[in-house]
Image (cartoon, rainbow, N blue to C red; front, side):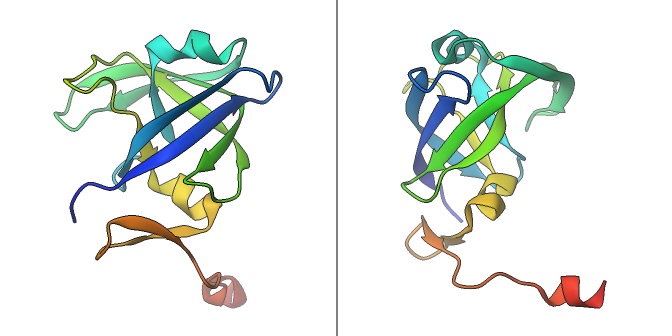
Length: 133
């Protein structure tokens, strides 16, 4: 598919002055918003909602901290309330590589345009499965 990079803004839900803007890689194999632990302090005081173990792409198990509430805006689409998962990561040659998981795309109402490798607004919501429930 190729790499899809999007601009993300994360704002502390309790302190709107504390925010972080960055480029994130869309990873349809990830869920949620995965940020480097080194950025947690930049967002100020956040509640720890859970400690979880994550499996990385190279099958390592790492401990991560889910925190919130935060406001998330992806590529200028509507913002939504959510949480961020902070994990220890090493910066690469171009800095950290935060991940934007598929659940955020669903919540934000966007899909990936595979030709242009960018996000586009989903035109309709799929309620077919809800009608069968």
